Amino acid sequence: MRNVVLSIAGLDPSGGAGLTMDIKTLTSIGVEALSIATCLTTQNTREVKNVEEVSDELVAKQIDLLMEDIPIEVVKIGLLPSVEMIKIIASKTQQHKWKVILDPIFTSTTGYSFYDHSMIESLKKDLLPYVYLLTPNKSEAERIVGWDIKTRGDAETVCNELYSMGCRNILLKSSYGRGVDLFYDGRVYVTLSLPKHPLEVHGTGCVLSSLIAGFLSKGYSLMESIKKAKSILWGLMLSSRKIGGGLRSISYPSNSFVEESCMIVDEVHAETLLELKSCLEELLSILSIDFVPEVGCNIGYATPSARSKEDVCAISGRIVRVANSIRCCGPLSFGVSKHISSIILSAMKHYSYLRSAMNIKYDPKVIDAAEREGLKVGFFSREDEPVEVSSTMEWGTSYAFTRAKQPLDIIYDEGGIGKEPMIRILARNPREVLDKLRLLQRI
Image 1 (cartoon, rainbow, N blue to C red):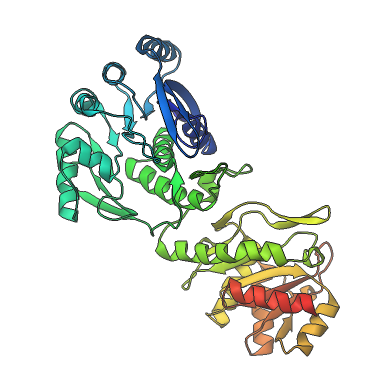
Image 2: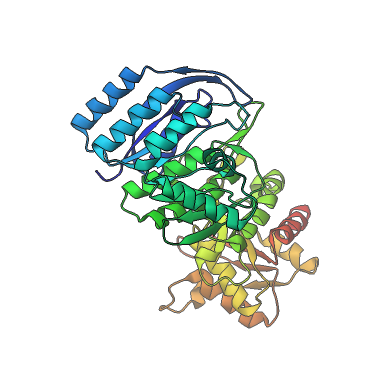
């Protein structure tokens, strides 16, 4: 059945990994999450104390009853706490011919060991021959095959060994460098990499395997599912947060599907997002509520060779006024703001280094003061807009630059029927936008 995934995993009461995180992850991409707990852990964000296994008989009965009612095709498997549990899950996988994504969890992020030698041997003998996709990290793969991975060649050899054990596909995470994954399907090796992430986050293996399972259930190919899952996970890690005294956990946006809001496609986009993110918290701390227009404001930053709004990072919602304070609605992402993207892309056609922009509330006193301070100010009037124009922001920005015949720091318009007047700050990067905003707020 499409859009349904069964997760068979351990329960992490802190919510950062295991069954709880699987459910949150699958739900966030519009997939129905079915769940069976294999064990109950005693843990928080700092440590794991112990693991209590759910009875094998109960797990088997839950699987049988679900399968009588729901045609489950895709199953994500996490922590299996015993040899007996491994054998039961292997038997059910063989019986129901599931498409299994197995995320082998031998050790917690905080260092607690879940598997002993006999369990690894059972995993190899009983379950791996029926696995559609195995997603071990480097240390897990090393424990399965029994030797270390030091080079690309070692990683390929390990993938081949795992394939020979029966796995149809292998995604070896951080295979020979952090952020560098190696995929193998028995025919070709594919390197999948994103920039080294600046944050250490709990439960990322659970999130990645659940995303892959979810996208498979929605009809995507395996490679499409892996690529989407990796890029989304990278973006989600930026919005992770500490809810306790230990590791950070993934925090999902409450107002949108992550499939639509958290994609990172390559290193250039990642670096652009990180640079904008590094300024966003400061922007929120200095932005005066008097400078936030009725429609809210946004800030954007384009990649150096931006060609479309998919190359412009901005806030997926906006910065808005709430009572006597301001609030940032939504995470940073690419392709989410037509308004700010049109301004930046139009500016870059005239001066390619003007890659960042922000809109603020119009006030003629601000314009007068900006000119006195030596900022280059341009404008356009909506009354002059040709009827055939499809984007006012693109046309207005280009009009202002053409008329000024020089780079501009500010472009404004005085609005129109149903249109709020607005000031746009333009700059090379978000840091320059903040500097100009500070100047405007002082005067």
